Length: 388
Image 1 (cartoon, rainbow, N blue to C red):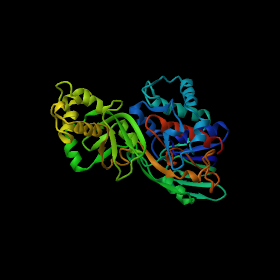
Image 2 (cartoon, helix red, strand yellow):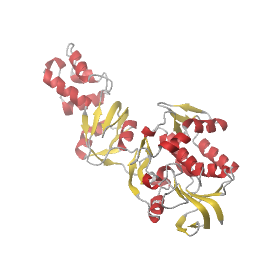
Image 3 (cartoon, rainbow, N blue to C red):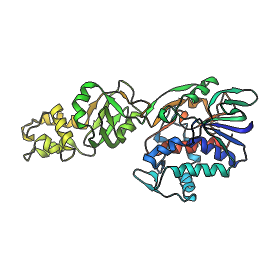
Image 4 (spheres, rainbow, N blue to C red):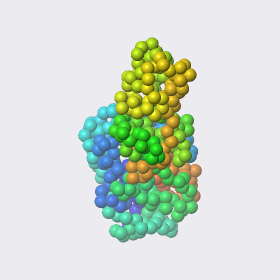
């Protein structure tokens, strides 16, 4: 069957692109290999879908070309998607740091997209697996439900994160088939693992959470970190994982917003031990374990000025050497992907393959934690939808 537009992938970006193309009178077919569309939307945000972030800027995204995302983000903003959510009567709230969630269920966002698709005349086929794509005068998609032909082909197949809900490398294979470069995909927004020695020392603290600032390669995030039976997690760790590379260290400031040196000096005036002082700012179990490992704990007035300075430095620069990540199974998104140098930032079309578009997570644009990746899905889908 012949269509104007074929879209591979029925996730956030693919559905949004389909809506925009359908509004322009294009005949659109979405091919989704899973039994239903929007599976990643459904599980996002603890089932409430963190559908955008009020504070979205290009600086909230990683890419080999940090400027690439600017055009799409400027043309479809969080306010634009919020207006759509409100038009559908979906209640929402800001949780923190500009993160917007549904009051009800993430299913409301899936239903919004399906409703808009229906209104725009978009056709969707689920359980439809594409085995290969050919190119003649048009694009030809061979699937288990037949062969489909279109002038424009949009790849919105996502990345490698969360394979249990169907993630594959199909989009990267299509890109390479048409001669496009791919930035090596890697897990992002993912918990980090520790080496056996550090794990042995920190394992008793599994489940302990504390506020901290985590720094790596110039990036810094101040949110909670969580100690786990395999290593480190929590928002600050997930954020920094997108920047961390194997072999690098993390520096963790355990007393963000405080002058650790001054706190220790002030503590010398009383009868505080190091551990009792630290429990004023840190979980008790963590403070005690940290003291045992790094400084011992005795009355603060028994430490020399040099020792106080050294302890303060360690508190504000606790160095951790992750051994790796928990991989794509636990990663919220995939960093890397189709090289942005290969695409038009205005249309998302491949420069060397007219009519071929890449949008969403399959592209080398990765957002911070907190709704930014959904905003990239809407914005990149919108951009391509104006031109397919």
